[in-house]
Image (cartoon, rainbow, N blue to C red; front, side, top):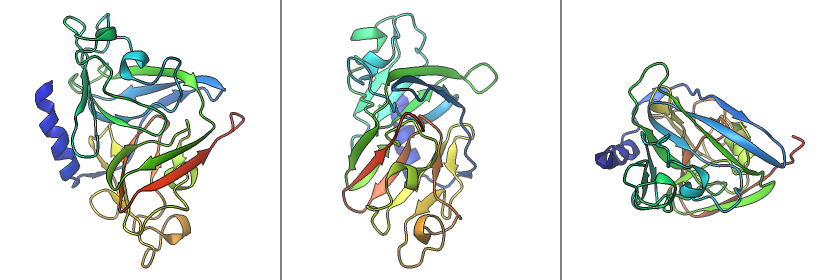
Length: 244
């Protein structure tokens, strides 16, 4: 499992695959609710858009003491490397709830995302479903750093990342969104190698015509993470009512 780290670095540098987006999710939009995410064989980028009782460390969110998640490995980008890594390994874990590295390094507060590698081979029946439970944040602000950031919409919303996610006022010219398609193991179709580029001067698509091709803004499913490449630090704010 640990040898897969190199592949994740390659994913960041190799954005040549173009595809459409598909991911199945189930959710309950109550003040206290749940999000169920379908993890496809291979790489998935996900986030927990709820505030869990006891905190949003991986060890608190998922219990692997019975080996349910032994085929999963979590890799979270820290801004310079994938230092935050937790592996399902109930037989010989060194930390709580069956996670080999303790399940304490990967943190999924609303707005944060992580890679999840499902090492099951492709094929029917090899998806793994995980469920997060907690409180819907409502109004939440997320600050991203310069460079690559793994983020989610901070509330359990699907659809347009820019208008739903609160990026409309704070994007930098030249920023970019990368949306990973777990079904096809490639990035979603975009103007250049699956990238949605912000272009204030020459853009003609998406929100306020601020994007290069393709027509429209990047979209995500509930619980789905994405890369945000920021030219300089920004804060995006999302407001959400449980009646939506």
